[in-house]
Image 1 (cartoon, rainbow, N blue to C red):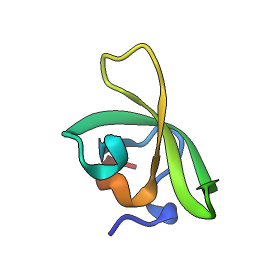
Image 2 (cartoon, rainbow, N blue to C red):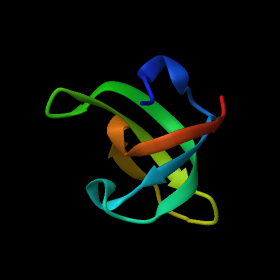
Image 3 (tube, rainbow, N blue to C red):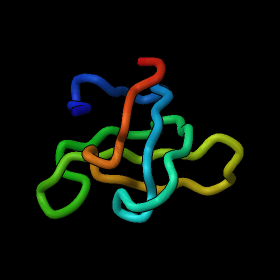
Image 4 (tube, rainbow, N blue to C red):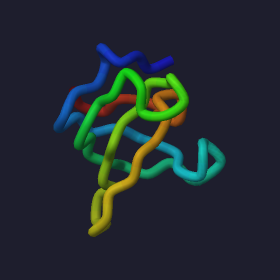
Amino acid sequence: MVKLKDVRVGSIVMVRGNFGTGFAVRAVVAGVEADIKNGRPGIDYTAVGAKTSNWAYLDQVDRVITR
């Protein structure tokens, strides 16, 4: 389980979109929030090769590749 202390801006992570049901993609963390939505921690990120950013709850992050 990934925790807030495990990620920071610039970290490379594997994250699943669509509230955890999507395929895992490599992404760069753009922001880390203790309350991204509904009192749950999460990240803002941009998938490698994408032009737009997204957000995800922290439990959607499968693993941290580089911190």
